[in-house]
Length: 207
View 1 (cartoon, rainbow, N blue to C red):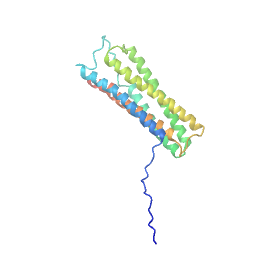
View 2 (cartoon, one colour):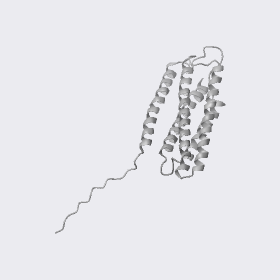
View 3 (spheres, rainbow, N blue to C red):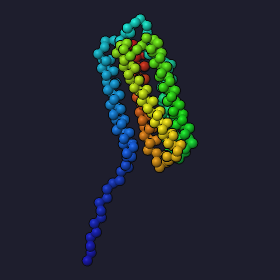
View 4 (cartoon, rainbow, N blue to C red):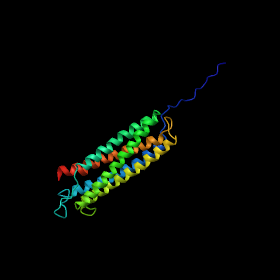
């Protein structure tokens, strides 16, 4: 007597997202909403003013210039995106020496960006620009200030990952933390692209 055998139903296998990456995706989603609200307020003020940026309260020109410091900062930050990405890729291939070199370069480029942004703030204050000068000045300092704080946070994360990697905690089979921090660093690069385009280039073209 033949007995019919029932095969267990096979379910398709999908690549699982690591919990660490899931947490980073959720965090970045909240960051997108945060910066999105800042950009929304900026465009609201742009649309509600007949002249944008508003005229300075004094006869001194105080608006920011897109060249040379912001351009240099953009090159520095975008260069750090490449060193961060290829450094993470090197660790995924167990090329630890290349990883350490590229991520050290990423941290140095990020620090150079922060010093450049600090110099830009000091220069803006020297030209009479302050947080309460007018609506454009408030937007500029708030938006670029929050971005600078995020870059600083990214530098802390990069340093922690580099320290842990020096202790042998990451490899080609275990590098979720490296991938998560790399994703975060790319996020701050993308945000800076929009800030540079809107606050520097856009103002220079239409003022």
